[in-house]
Each structure stands twice: as structure tokens, then as C-alpha cells.
Length: 71
Image (cartoon, rainbow, N blue to C red; front, side, top):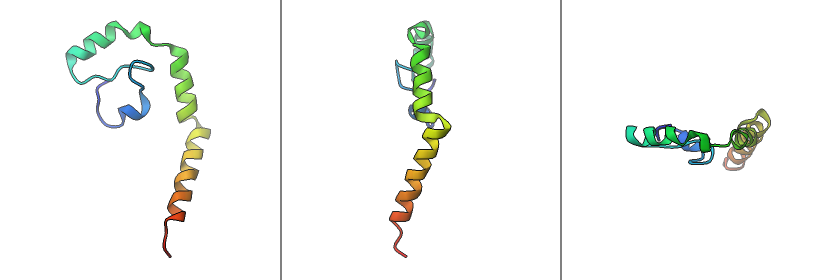
């Protein structure tokens, strides 16, 4: 995928995909796509983006926000 927006939060370069800056890099990455382990991709998504993982991240964010208020 092209290195835009929040790509680096969801793709681990050369592990769960390829992050590229140019069309030439994309062509090269496509030729290596068979090197990506689908199981590793699934584990990464389950660890970081499952409903449980996201819920815990939101809970931590809320705790930080509530702890930083000076009311």
C-alpha cells in the first residue's frame, strides 16, 4: 500500500504487507506478495484491531483523558 494516512498503524512493512512511496516500488512489492504470511497478518489484526483490543485501547484513552483533567 502507498505510505499515506494511517497505513503504518495497520501494515507492518515486509511482515503483513508492503509500504511503498512510488509506483515502481509498488510493482516490486507486488512481485513479493507471496512472501507475506497470511497467518501473521491474521494474528496482527486480531492482536491490534479485534473488538477486545480496540475496547481496551479506548478504555486506556478515556482513563488518560480523565486523569489529565484539572476540574
